[in-house]
Length: 234
Image 1 (tube, rainbow, N blue to C red):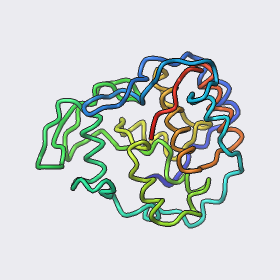
Image 2 (image 1 turned 90 degrees about the horizontal axis):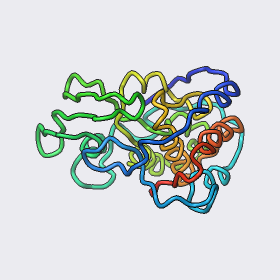
Image 3 (image 1 turned 45 degrees about the vertical axis):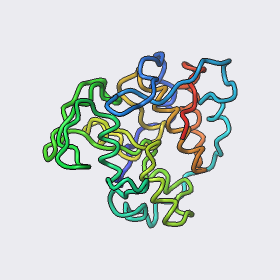
């Protein structure tokens, strides 16, 4: 989906991006909703089940070369991995938009992203003239450089189509993110940052994708401001 990276100073961004508190959009994403991932009852800081504790458990390694990466390494287009007869992209649109109207059984014709997770703005979706992308929370290129190049094609296809790793977002913000990790890019909409990082942690933990030192530090900086943020279920 993305083949280039935002080159921002990781140490500076990790230290400064997320000093503001995280809150707001931490509810379960549901069909027609534009909120974040599920939250359970708050627990102690860094307690079992928290995103902060899970972030501590992620393997830290250096970034591998991007050699050999292409979108096709993760399957062609949007695959119907849940075998419901509809492409994954349509499933995510149905989940994240409200007031959805359909072109046919599967294809979404229109709807509203009530609160874009990356900008906080309301965005109208119109098929054929959309300003909405389906983003991989953990970018495919980022995953490729942190373990996915060692996977078989089936696992990479599952990763690319896993709803845990997918979200409807503002297309312009998604382009700015590119294949950045938490050390180089965070949503401008600060109220969503805790949910966003918790989702990244959940995806990387589920698939065994490692993190760099700078990335882990940035994740923990965000999650330190919301220590009871729960790790979303996959």
